[in-house]
Image (cartoon, rainbow over all chains, first blue to last red; front, side, top):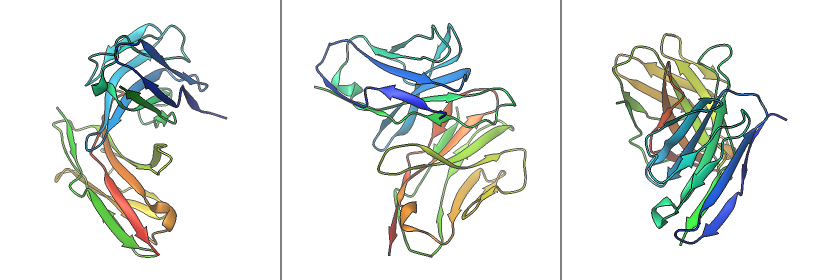
Length: 115
Length: 114
């Protein structure tokens, strides 16, 4: 089954404790992105990657890091989480073959709470 | 920079009736894509319908259709024969032709009453 998986799905942590949210896709997609969703703000892009070892900042990259060492994986790293990073996080992937109109596949989301 | 505006935080509709959700956007680009996503209580993001800006014909997917007005920069979603399962948050989104970034509106919560 074609899918994007994220782990963990729920996480409660404390300020300053480094954490990683994993994202994996099994569709051999080139593009991958991370978004955060906050009430009243919709979804905003944090980082994106166009292929292995190619990453770039989205609209709200402060406090986050990413890496793309393998095509299928795109982990989101919070080196020193703060309460304002409490949010719902989505990973998404997309294929560029066939043109730019291919849809984005979203993961199930990760609910992060930073105390 | 592009922006997407959904001016209706909440809407409600009776089962089997029709409802229209509004979306406007701002861009100086001529080529782009527009999307409507549905987010049910499970929080999964589900693509409902998409429209390529170069296509004049409005997209349709079963009970879902759009009214795309490029000059007015308007992209409304019409849901016909509403069903209880249509109750969800709906997001309008924009994507430039040559990027991977989706720019989302703030969402419209749709309630469906029996």
